Amino acid sequence: MTTNIIEKPIQIDGLSLPMRIYKSAATQPGAPAVLHLHGGAFVSGGLDDGRAVATLLAEAGAGVMSIAYPLAPEHRFPEGLEAAFGALEWLYRTKARLTGRKARIFVAGEEAGANLAAALALMARDRQGPELAGQILLSPMLDPRLATCSMREAAAGPVGCQWADGWRAYLGSAEKAAHPYASPPVSTRLANLPPALVLTAEDDVLRDEALSYAKRLRAAGVEVHENVLAGPTGWPCALHGKQTPPASWASAVSDHFKKFFAATARMSGCCAALRPLSN
Image (cartoon, rainbow, N blue to C red; front, side, top):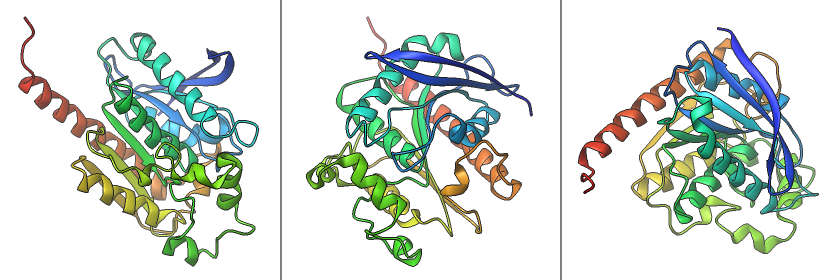
C-alpha cells in the first residue's frame, strides 16, 4: 500500500519541530488523527526512526502527524514532553486539514515515544483537553528503576545500558522519577484515561513494564487492549528506523491498530448515545 508523506516543521513555543504527515489509501475523511512519537531512549532518534510505526498507523487507516521532539540531555524532563503537548494541541486545532473536523484524536509511540504518549494522556486528562479517543503504546519505556524480569533477562541494568543512560539524561536528577508525567506507572490516579492499546513481544526487553502498566490501567477502570507478539521480533530496537518492518510482526501490528480504531469508534458511539442533549 502506498503511503504519502509530507514533511514540514511546526512552531511550538518558540521551537521549530520537524514534522511529517502520513496518509495512505486507507486514510478516509473522518479517519483517526494520530500524534506519533518516535523512540530512542529520550536521547536519540528523529523522523526517520519513527517511519516504520507511523507508516503502519497510516496503513491501518489513520492520518498520522509524526514529530521529532526535543531530545535529552539538552532538553530534560519536562521540556520534550511539553513540546509534545504543544504539538497535540496544534493537531487538535488543525485536525480538519489532516482527516476531518470530526476526527478522533489518538496519541501513539514506541519505546521512549510511548512513555511520552502515556504521559500526554495523563496531561490531557488533567488539563481538560484535548480530548483523546485512545493511546497506543508499543514497547513502552516506563520504569526508570530497570527492575523488571525482562530487563534482567536481557542483562540490562544501571551500568552500560542504553535505557539506563537514557533515563539519566532525560530526568537529570533521581527525584524526577517520582513525577507521574515522567514515569506514568507511579501515578496514583490512572482513572478516566482514554482506552489503551499496549503491544509488546516475547523477546521485548520492556515487556514486563508494558504488561504491568496495562494491568494498572485496567485496575483503574481503563479499557485496555493488550497483546504479546511471538518472538523473535527484536523489539524495541527493531521498531526504529526507516526500513520496512518484517512481515512476521508488521501485519500483526497493523491488524491490532485497525481493531483498536474500530473498537474505540464503537465506544465513542455508545458514549455519544448516552450523552444528554444540550439545550
